[in-house]
Image (cartoon, rainbow, N blue to C red; front, side, top):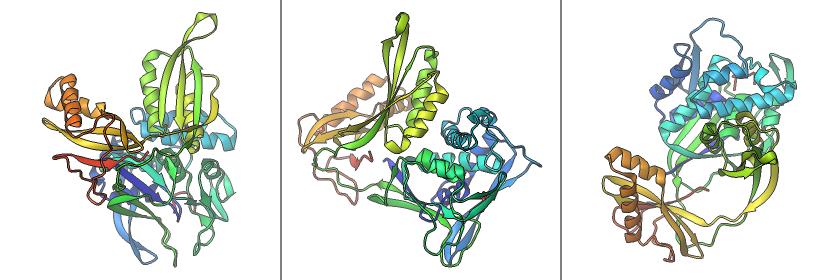
Length: 429
């Protein structure tokens, strides 16, 4: 079942705090350490301990650097280190763009100072590994407390929020200092970059069947205010019975014409854009001036993700410009039903309108994965999944099922289940 994570950043956010919250929620520390070792072998060791913050229990994660005098690194260097780790690359790309903007230099030349140190790399890579270990598919977050006052950095004393944090906050709901908090930095550049890369929606706690809660501690223990980041993980608990189509949703359409990119690179480009929060990304063949064959890259995304995705387009393609259009999309109501197939189950995505099923199609990635696991042709597994969907009444023109139990997420179809779609000084937090 699809798992969603909501980040409570109402007291601020930092990379080490989010990593600790994920470990507290059940992520395996061994898996996290193994992922970090794959990027910076033998350089850091992650340890955790149970602590209290304002009298409340939390987990504190510490990254012990095992090499003397770790160097400052440019984004170009870090990008090479993160080759093969698209989620971590997306986070640091977001961070590099922010630092480049505030310093007025090319992103590849940004020296990350504290942000590029081994402990920050370990935080970002470790968070990605923890998300995979927990099976997190989608992420949203609360408004973010940024803090107030000043903070000392490698560039001297800076106002809070620091310039990079302020840049990363564009399009997100933020506040200054929450009640009970004194002056200081509550959101670090690394923490804000992680949140803006992972989370697609700024929202209050959504409707979830809660499966795990994790609490990650910052270094300071402030009386009267718990210095923590919380994560709430679960599966959507809303009943997916007959409902009107989704209300119109504001969106942004990014487009770029590209005529000189090696076509073998396009699948990776589309994958990175989707992993970075695009709702959809696609290519359309076109013919440009002088008869040159080319492609139009289109990316549909929430308004809050447009800036980061635009930066990824510039980074991973050869385009010299990106068009941007405000638009609206009209989504169908949708949910998934897991149907039994010999040797396993496959999720069927059901789109419905006014209580009538409009589309019902097995998720092909699950079909392909099951076919590989069983050593069978994909077409056979797909055919069985379509038959199972029909047997469950999931066919175009049928009435959408209304016998879903929101508490248990099960249907009356034997063997199936249904569920809704859910379309400081640095480091001292």
